[in-house]
Length: 284
Ligand code: PRT
Ligand code: ZN
Image (tube, rainbow, N blue to C red; front, side, top):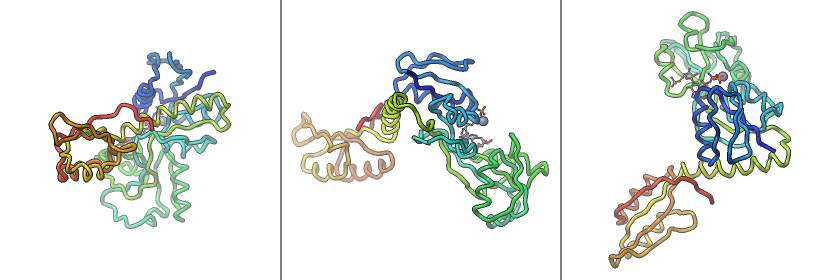
């Protein structure tokens, strides 16, 4: 029994999907120009596909799971289940208009033409907002549509914003924040579900490790209580005596979100020689 995994053949999600599998300790045979490959040390088979096709393959059970952008999952609207956010491929799906247009709110779009490769999501957004717009589905280079008179607005993925900027466009509404997710077939056989649970356990360990740092510092003993009070740690921090009397070494794990805040407070409290080390895997 193997778990069949669909990933993007080439494009923005290919590298990060393969890297994540690798970080999960799964060795994939080189898949360049192949449709399918397998792992030597985990019962999975990897299928390389166009991202747009992945939800359909997963719905049909041709693939058991897939790594794909949330934007594609919502646009294709297939019967699949989103199991885990993967933390890469982050972008947003936004509406943009010409920089010179006076846009105040979504009512501007009433009766206007919107060019997009995401007609389903855009239609739903317009219905929710009670706006009647004319949605033009096009297959690529959406950003040139206003310039050539095809549409007054566009809806496309944005990450840095430089494509919009270079085409004289301005982002006016964000419909969706997206990232790569893991989807699965509905009604996966028990044995496959067990394999997926094993894979998920590893993915979560990799994700957690990326959001956390291992911190080591030296603390004068009279400040230990105050310093320990600042540290969350997995259970509680490890405290070891230093060779120099009156000092201890404190080890802990800090979350990326409150990392700088806590480091500043630790310094103020008298911590010295603070070392911050990346964590490779984190299992709680
Ligand atoms: O061949 P295949 O169909 O598999 O690939 P594709 O060309 O459809 O997709 P690809 O590789 O471009 O993107 C795959 C997925 O990456 C998308 O479905 C998103 O989930 C995610 N992603 C993340 C992005 C971006 N960021 C992104 N910036 N996908 C596309 N873009 C494009 C956007 O369409 C626009 O043309 O990049 C341009 C904007 O980028 P900025 O940085 O200029 O704002
Ligand atoms: Zn695509």
